[in-house]
Amino acid sequence: MRRILIVGSSGAGKSTLARELARRLDLPLIHLDRHYWRPGWAAPADADFRAEVAALAARPVWVMDGNYASTLDLRLPRADLLVLCDPSPLRCLVRVLRRRWTHRVTPRPDLPEGCPEQIDVQLLHYVWSYPRRSRPRVLAAARVLAPTLPLIRLRTPRDIRHFLATLPDAPRYAAGRPAPPGAHR
Image 1 (cartoon, helix red, strand yellow):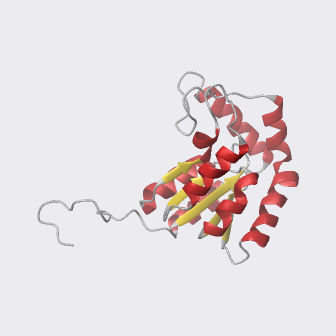
Image 2 (cartoon, one colour):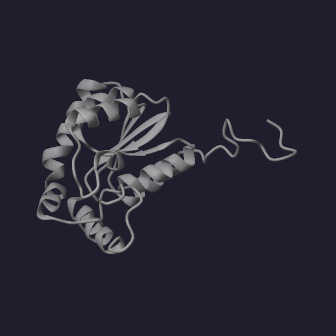
């Protein structure tokens, strides 16, 4: 696995899982929220964001988290694995509320500067309706754009623990990093 795409509702645990996968597999981490949002939650021009995502997806290795359905056509064909974080909408809502409370003072590491954690009715509606509106579109896009792409669907914390247990830990001395004195490669 060299390019892992992680999708799911807000509050599904995408960013947390992406950080852990990047650490364990020693892969670069790309949070699409950091590339999409501008200070004050301003959205970029569609063409600018697509160009940036195309460049990110063209990299040889990555763990990338984020939905952004308008760029699935750029990311799915490049991915080696699609991970759908798919807990219940209620669990996602609880996590969104908890995340807002946790990051009321300090910014989230997966958001760009100038975008403090916030909750509005639109976000809550998105989270609640994700299973019937967004999830089917993501799965349909995967079937069309990358029909042989392996899909792992994680619904519960137990599913996540089991998935992580199947992965090797990061190489102790990854390529390009010097080995400690006396170590043999």
